Image (cartoon, rainbow, N blue to C red; front, side):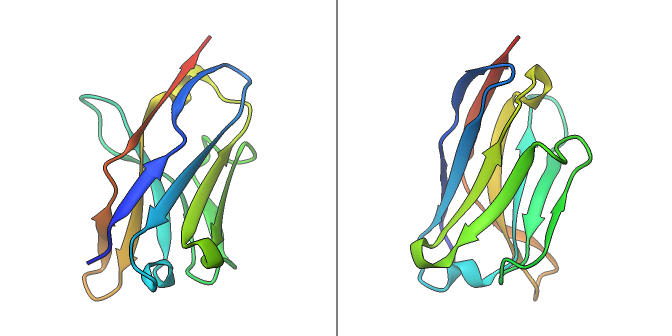
Length: 119
């Protein structure tokens, strides 16, 4: 079992920056490939970014490419999502998740953190 907790969300103006953090509860938890997702009420959860467990490979949704950066600090057991040049359409609850290879899915999820971007 891996417990994940997000933080760093809040209210920002368009063009501003925020950095989200995802802290894992277990020492070995960041030995999973990890991802960030977001969701608005009534909508499907949307992929934002993912990073390999060694931090060497990253992938981004087209909507955030060039503005968001995903990273991992293994020493702190923390994953980050640096969000620059925020847009109102980035408003959502952001979730971090861990990929479980044996189950072939993101099977560990945090409770989410709200990001609201005003125009």
